[in-house]
Image (cartoon, rainbow, N blue to C red; front, side, top):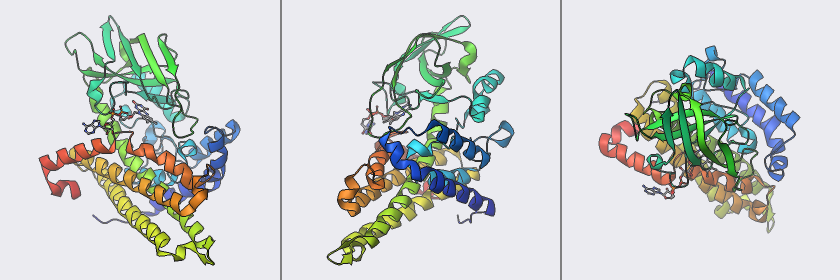
Length: 391
Ligand SMILES: Cc1cc2nc3c(=O)[nH]c(=O)nc-3n(C[C@H](O)[C@H](O)[C@H](O)COP(=O)(O)OP(=O)(O)OC[C@H]3O[C@@H](n4cnc5c(N)ncnc54)[C@H](O)[C@@H]3O)c2cc1C
C-alpha cells in the first residue's frame, strides 16, 4: 500500500509545478476578466512549452507521440494544473485514453494521431436535455443507411465544441439487429447537419464554451463508428473512470493553492493589532482544510498507483467514484473557507478564492454528480464488501 515517488515522478511533478507557477498563475486575472481568453501568441507559446517539457498528450503512449506518463505521473501533473484556473490549466491535454485500443487504422490516422500531435481537437457530445445522470435515457439515434449512418439528436453542455473540429457523438441504434443499443461515432463538426443551437453562459469564464449542438440527419461513413455497434457505453465508462480520477487530482491541487493563499493572507492580515491567523476561528479552518486535503491526496495517489499496478476494473470504478466524490466535496469546502478567510476580498473577482469557489462547483456535477458517485459506491459495496473497495 505504501510507495514513494521515483526520481522521474518528482521531476515531472516539479516541471509541471514550475510551469504553472511561472507561466499560468500570473495570467489568471487577465484570463478571468477576458472570458478565459489570453493573447493567442502567449497561448501558442504555452502549448509549445508543454510539448517541450514532454507533458503533452500525457495519457498517450510514447510510440503514438504522447508523453507516455504512468497514471500516478498524470495525477501529479493534474494536481499542478488544478492549482490554476482551468481556463489556463487545460493547456495540458489528455485525449480520449480508451481510443487507441479500439480505433481502426483509418480513425488513428484521421483523428487520433493528429489529436496527439495537437493539430486536431475533440469534444464529447453525450448529455442531452432529457439525459444527464442516466446516459441510457439518451434519445439521439443512429440509423444505418447503406455504407453510412444517419445521426440525429441534440446534445447539451458540449465542452470545447467552439474550439474543436470533431465530436464523439453517442446515440442509440435505431433499427437493425442491435436496435436500442448504444454506439459511439466520431463526427467532423463541419459535416452538413451539425449546427450550434445556442451557447449559454456558465458560472466560470473559460474560452472553451459549452454549447448546445444539434445533429440533424448527419450522414457519416460506417468507418466513423468506433468499435462495434453496442460498444458505446463501454467507452463512456472507461472515460468516466479516467476523468473522475483526474478531477480528484485537480481538486487536490486547487485545495493546496487555496490553503497556501488563504494561509499567507491570514498570517499577513491583521485585525485589532494581531494576525487573523492567531484566532482559532481562522486557524481551525486552515487546519481542517489541510487535514482533508491530505486524506484526499492519499486516496488519489493510492488509487493512481493501484491503477498502474493493474487493480481490477470494478474496484477501479468504485474507487474512482470515491476519490472524485471525496476530493470534489473537500475542495468545495476548502474554497468556501478560503473565501471566508479573505473576507470582502474573497468576494472580488480578482481573488483566487472567489474564482475557485465558482469554478470548483462543477466538479460535484460533471462526469457524474456526487449523488451518482454515491450510487456507484453503494452498489459496489453491496456486491463486493468493504475489503476490495478500501484495499
Ligand atoms: C460545465 C459543464 C460541462 C459539461 N461538459 C459535458 C461534455 O463535454 N459532454 C457531455 O456529454 N456532458 C457534459 N456535461 C454534462 C454533465 O455530465 C451533466 O450535467 C451531469 O452528468 C449531470 O446531468 P444533468 O445535468 O442532466 O443532471 P440530472 O441528471 O438531471 O440530475 C439533476 C439532479 O438530480 C440528481 N439525480 C439524478 N439521478 C439521480 C438518482 N438516480 N439518484 C439520486 N439523485 C439523482 C443529480 O445528482 C442532480 O443533483 C457538462 C456539464 C457542465 C455543467
